[in-house]
Length: 418
Image (cartoon, rainbow, N blue to C red; front, top):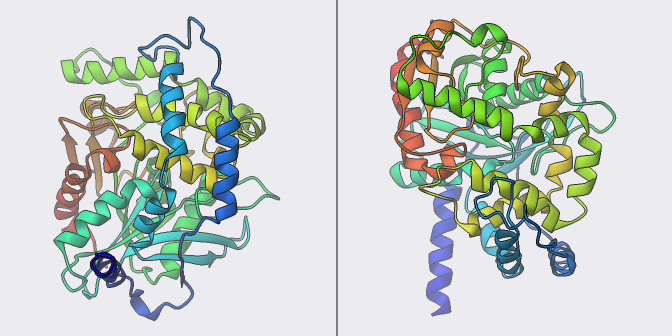
């Protein structure tokens, strides 16, 4: 029996490694294997086991989540987390080609960047950069990579797919002697693509923080030839247009944004105004981190298709083991400084010239109505309103998400000269 299991595992890893040949003879990026130490796992379990679930109150017993994470959910999640198989998740991550490379940047210095990738052997393969958000990670895109591995071979894959850990997220590093900004992070992502040999051009896709970086890159980087997002926040007061002639569906999006702004956005200002307090508090106790992030993993997906508890625990475990949370709050500093929503996640407007695609998923927390998007962005060549999915679209609905991206690429490809 064990020999059969070993053969299956070896076959699984060979498929992933077949996509791991770096293009253009690049040798700076080195293969990487994720392996949390036994000591880290033991420390985590000891801290979690000793952690107290808070008392019953009128708020913590409110089962509809109106006031945030409920006590009942947290108590059950704690029990499940103590039995969670982290090594299984590591094996899944390591079934894909993973790399680390040092990226040079004048503002923040040399920075270690992690990425997972599926590299094609086709000469005409289109480089495609996927950027995650908060409280996400590159793990969100693994279901999409699975689909691509099964759909294509290295000889037929039409893309070079690169999924990094954003600077100061997950397995990537970042400066501690200077404050990292979204502009810095965007420059690091662009330099990563240049260092991988994609200086002729690439396409960027992003959600949440990744959508802000995609918008910055669309202007900052001449190498970015087209961009696609699955979250589009109004970037300035001028982008809040009249609601007089919008459709019922668009009105629902506006109302959803209003609800989020009035009842669900406090974390943004807390992250931006007191990142030290939040970071130190939540990184001291795994149950505290689960309470904070778990709220978003419950609220933000499409409630009809919730994330499994095992998936949520994997995402939070990764944040815990990599000390991501206290390092990953910089995207919110700009909004805290302005005191309003101006330039949310992107300090500069997106390009209005390069091919732009926008996919709306119905349970997304921030949605720019279609009519507004088309007025603001004359370069919007692709718009699709999907029937299911939420904030973590690639993770929640990977097949649908990939379908959207490939539709956009089909439309934009003639304008992309590499």
